[in-house]
Amino acid sequence: QVQLVESGGGLVQAGGSLRLSCAASGDIFGINVMGWYRQAPGKQRDLVATITTAGSTTYADSVKGRFTISRDNAKNTVYLQMNTLKPEDTARYYCRVVQWNGRNDWGKGTLVTVSS
Image 1 (cartoon, rainbow, N blue to C red):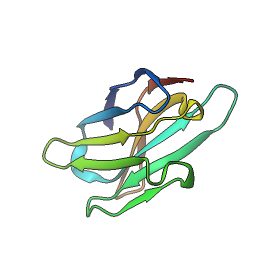
Image 2: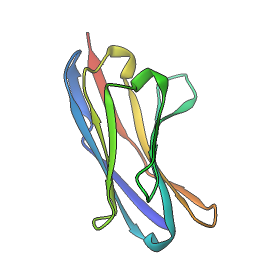
Image 3: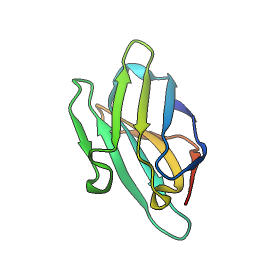
Image 4: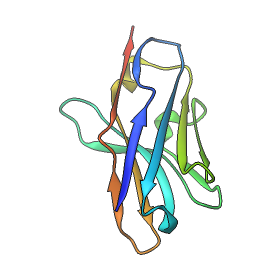
């Protein structure tokens, strides 16, 4: 099992920036994909961005050009740089890892609030 701890959330004005971090520990050697998802109140949890061990990335259309996902394999940490934040980006952001055997683990999330 992989334990994930997210940090970096908070309150920011529209147009501002935040950087989220997610540190993985435990059974980390099997990690393939690391990613960020978000869930706004009353809505489903949606993909924000993912990154593979090789560095291939995917993004939701709504964040392309504004968010950047990166990872430090030596530190077992994935980051999400969020720029030009909008009120609609307000959500709880969750880290997720997928192992090569298909198992996936989730963090508890960090809250991002963007004020207009």
